[in-house]
Length: 536
Image 1 (cartoon, rainbow, N blue to C red):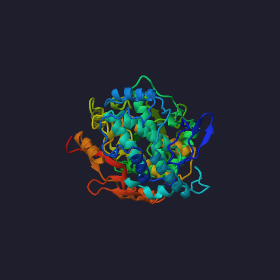
Image 2: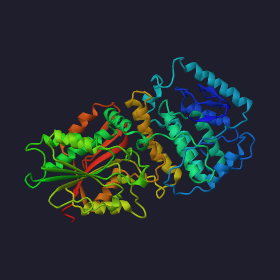
Image 3: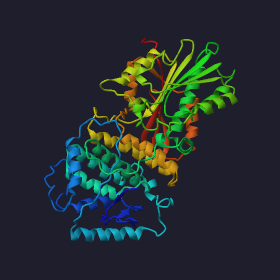
Image 4: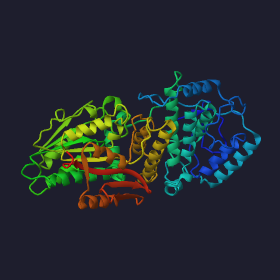
């Protein structure tokens, strides 16, 4: 838990408990809105009325006594900003905390803060504590309304100040964020918490004087196998984030298989480049067992997990001792499917070929690439184009491509603050949807999946592209898009009805791809590709 000195920014009431000479953050006010935060920022900087508009002004007010900055903190942040480059290191650094807030405040500002504090306290009920699920009004109403997403109105200007090298603004925004950020509460507070830690981590990459570390966040790779398994099962049960794409992929595999000559399909070979960790396949195996004529004589599953250096890819890693193969093999035996599983550890995607996966021309090869290919570099070296060419050379009967449907924000396509803003938008949708999925409950399972999603803020390989750009890439290497069969789409729609009404599916009229949307914002896409026989 973050700790800091006993001086607080008093306009935002917090439940605090003294511990030694420090104060621990309690629950932020659930009714806090963006207007009050922006008012506070304006009141706290009367000589800088355009703090959110003029983000790139010089840092000539660094000596202003109002700021009362700790010289050590200023030096650390200054050193960081002097060394900020467009390339983000891929190694993991410990998160950090700011040790002390600004010391001096004007009397007028204190009066306004007191008035706002009294107004906020009047709105709070005495029983409104974190974890009770009662403070959720903004969860359902804010949605993708930018005006209500106050965390981004603090995080994005802070990232812009980092890019501009403005020490004063960075220090100020971090102080405010540390007062408001919380790992619990509604999506705004949790986004502020993850975003603040990502910003401080980014700064610590560029200095030899890292700030004081706090307890590391538990992610998939650092959790226990049993907790990881339980959390993922629960998440897939209450959220369609991966469940619907997995369902579409399984149905598409059956669609491709049905289009092959039954007598010639002796072996079904699935190349699994995804994030399902085995949970996707029991449903497919059961469906194969119910096919007219039974399953193929042999089903091969080749799994390609991330390499060791790609440990920051969201949702792709698992605990070291986690093994899903034995459970799936046991299930396959129960449903009379002859299954073989091969795992290619530490094999870069761009090194894959027919020999490495041991593919043969007489088998039906289907590639299932889900939420992993956007981590391939698309600049220099262009590993993304190289992999797509290699995938084409394997001559698969079908490729199911699912990924995040968002613009690229990598260092080659923009600066740090633009990339950070893209990732914040993605993380907001995730946190907002998990607030609904978990019904406001503060659970360890929710913290785990949200921490995994938050890795998008610090992963330098987050090189997302929208569906249209992926279509161009696939076409260039010799694939043509095919529409999903009607029963594939109908089955996915029926599954989606199980979840919250803010989720929706959209089918592209031109190519038949399927998009998953949350509160009218695109989240991901699923598409089906085959080799273009006319072109090759």
